[in-house]
Image 1 (cartoon, rainbow, N blue to C red):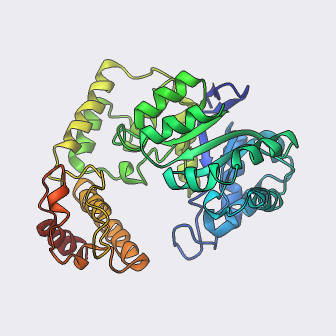
Image 2: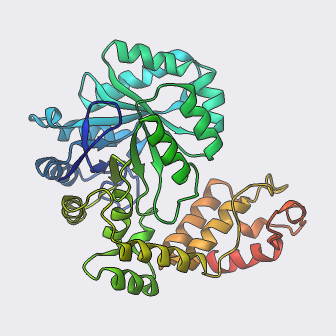
Length: 381
């Protein structure tokens, strides 16, 4: 296992972190509460025995059971070998005291007296303005830090770069958690956010290195390009190496759901270093990025100028799912995501479009949205 400094926190983290959101379950349903505990515990302990020292979980993962299983896995002396990162469910905070209520519940679940790295979870504009600032959550976190309940304070992020910069400039954060992979360089905070965090001396953890598993299931044409660059590497290793190549990234989180994945990722981490890419490998990643960009996808940038839709169709999300169905060999999974979107709000899917075309008049990309909504539903519905 290789290690890197976690910003200014004084800790050296393993470059591979265990993301505890995708444990194997008895009903095979993602994020289910029915975790197969003995397997999860074995996988966590195997990873720790092989040098992994950063465990990432959160209040809502697996319906609250992720933290419970992590607490069980860290018995028998394993707690002293790792740092725990967990997250405050800021969306559920309606008054300042709620922060402490959830923190105390998490400490009990995790069977520990402190959480080493505590994040404000999934910050976006609403959570930042209406929860963190309104209820003075940063001050509550500072008090918890002084009391010894948490170590370092950070945040995970799901919004645009301008908000990321506002949040970074608002407080002396120890670290942050960003979504980044070789297809998401300009998505959310993206590489601009990475560079800003490096400039600020923050520890940087990365989530979604495989783009929700999609970069492990790339089309054959992409596999051929990757094999030309380095035939020894799997698509998964390519995706992880892209991130480990960046020297400012301290730890890459992987939601490992099987012992095979744990062993493979530990093997990849054992040979990964900063600035490891040869010119040929960097060129390969650029070719792959260009190949994905050239696919016949809908040119939606998710600017959301088209929103809100009068009948509540989530236009950007429908286009995002359609594009994923074009880009990856995962049509069944994308169809499931489309169904989940419908189950959350039956009006949000493409079939609800009434072709009023109000959205088309404000779309900067001049997309024929109404016509394409029918195509989206034909493919995914």
